Every structure is written in C-alpha cells, then in structure tokens.
Image (cartoon, rainbow, N blue to C red; front, side, top):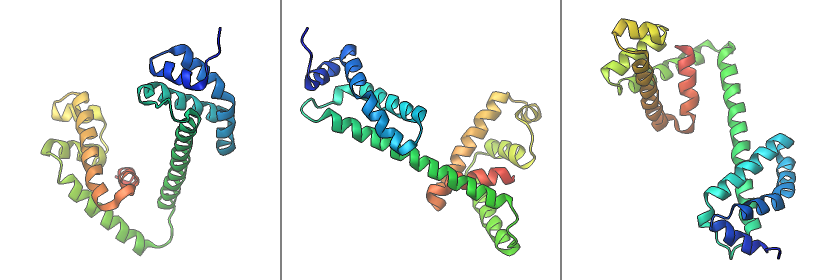
Length: 196
C-alpha cells in the first residue's frame, strides 16, 4: 500500500477520512507535545493542549486549504491555545492577588472606604437595571444571605426559578459593570458578591 503524502492526507481529512486524521495526529504528536512542554513545563498539560488542537482540526476540517502548510496551521493553533492558557493563568494570578489584597487590611481605611463607596454606587446602579423580581431575589440572596430554598419558600416560587433569576441578574449586572470597568467587570462582580 502506497504511503500518502501530507497534502493527500489533508485532502482525505477534508473528506471526513478518519484514518487520515489518525495518521496526521500520530505524525505530529511527539513534536507538538515537545513544543508545548517548552512553555507549559508539564507533560500532561502539553498533551491536553495537543489533543485540543487536533479536536479543533477535526471540527474545522472542511475549512482546511490543502495547498497551504498543514504544519504552519497546526503550530498557529497550538501557539494560540498556549497564549490563551498563559494569559488565563496571568489573569487568575492577578485575580487572586486582588482578592488577597482586599481580604487583608491594608491600613489605608480612607482609600478603602472611597473604593467601597464607589463600588457600591456602581452596583446599586447596575441593580436598578434588574426587573423587580430579580432585584428582590438578588437582595435576598446577596444582601440577606438567604439560601435559594429559603428565598423560594418566602416568595412561593421554585428553587429553579430562584436560580434562574439570580443567574440572569448576575449577567445583567456584569454587562452593566463591563461598560464602566472594562475587562475587570468579572473581578469587581466577584469582589462585590464576596463582600455582600
């Protein structure tokens, strides 16, 4: 049986040939995992990224161009996934740092009071965008620290309905905060919810 070259494998892959996918997967596995390990310093992490890369290849196979370098295409996907993961790790570290700083008394009570006042005013404006029912449920949940079951019993609605209202309320608040705080909306929402 004749061995297919890479371009033939890509054409076969475009036409849903699983054996071509497996050949390409096996052909690139070792070198792309090695490439990922240089950045992640973890074999398991690198293997996960490689696997995700090939999942993306399979899902987007119909858009492949057999006349372009498949190797370059793979490296681009892998590089983007690595950058996204490294960016997420940086953001997670930043979030942990902010939460830790908020949790520890920094000794600057005046500055903390001003920040808390500004955040609370922003939150109040965001809450004003909620429906009356969402507002009531959000305040019972975050303000009075009631469980979903307690809220459901008090308002004579199902726990599922309470969960839906809280989920929708948080999305509405996040959208409002994003207009004024940009990429830090999620962090601010988390801090506000932790403080409620």
